[in-house]
Length: 510
Image 1: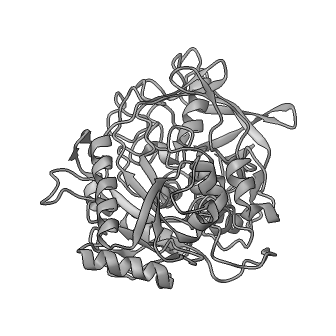
Image 2: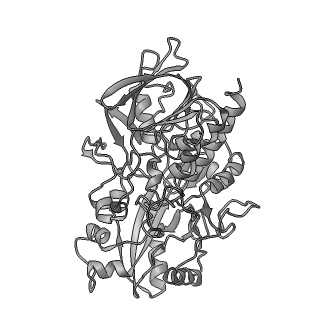
């Protein structure tokens, strides 16, 4: 019997454990996978991207019932072990209703101010480096980032200067990285293999190192690995979860807890609720609204490789972003989205994406000249874009939306780069995050258990408690009402801190 069971050890689950560890309550974190092994293959792009060494071997279904292997990572720290650690606050406007080319981005039941202090705490917890005020769209904060911005390497500084001369406003990208060695780190350190790679040097600001490791220092906190939660059972009244059924090493076990925190990620949390149907909840647990699994979003994303005329010997290029098109402007009636830098391509990644080399270039030469960009546009909530489960298999039914703004954004970036006279050609990089930019790349997954005031149209309330159950909290990307156009991780972390405080002050007081 536990006081609190947390399902999942990613951004939400690990941070919940961190926040609640000092309560003295008996806490168990249940993680489906194991620790990511520290090995030389961590930084091998063939192993990571082509052989998918660290992704699940599970197969999901697309809307046509065609199986695909998702770029999901089941391990301690969740997908944060592989993310690029770009840690953004949502803009103040993102919490309000916004018109886009593809439709309406709805308002949240909370405002930016409800998360403001938690955003700052999250930035400190995850060692974010940045420069407050360099991003013209960033919400104001009187406190600086906890760490100075990462410097631009010479070739990246040239690109920054060229885009500035073009009239854009490049800003210092907020990146989570800890330059103080972690006591368990046993690999030489280089700020190089970052996006999509696990960090053998353990400097990346991930949920395992920043939150979970600190929680596990408390004697009342346990971690159970290689344990998949298969079902949540409820009492006769249908008001509380009474049992957590898990599978571990081929055995089925039943755990009990007063409070259950579901943080398995927007897709897997929804799938678990849908699989936990009962007489009281015939459409899935906590799903009287029929909203569990619906409104799945993961952004419109594009990775663009631009070939610089001169060699780019940058080790770490992920140091600036562009938000000149984040909001509507004099040139565009509606928002286009966000641009940031990516980790540096190598020949293996480029070869996997391009069947033929660019004219005059080998793949090795292309990699030597590559400058990598990541473009993100808002994905709008659509109830027909959804997660379901068919005979135990996850199915993602998804059709892209708001594509017009994203196409404008790509065109603007290419036009700006061409104007510098320093770029020869452009190609789109599909292998990033192990797969293409379609449903097989669920890195920014959100929206499947949306937050709201009305139990008839939402799954959780403003404190992430399920409307239908007294003791279930869902704290991962599922609570997002809209997706914004920046990486969602910091918002998940900040919300976990906020919900943790709510539990401390209102639920765990006995």
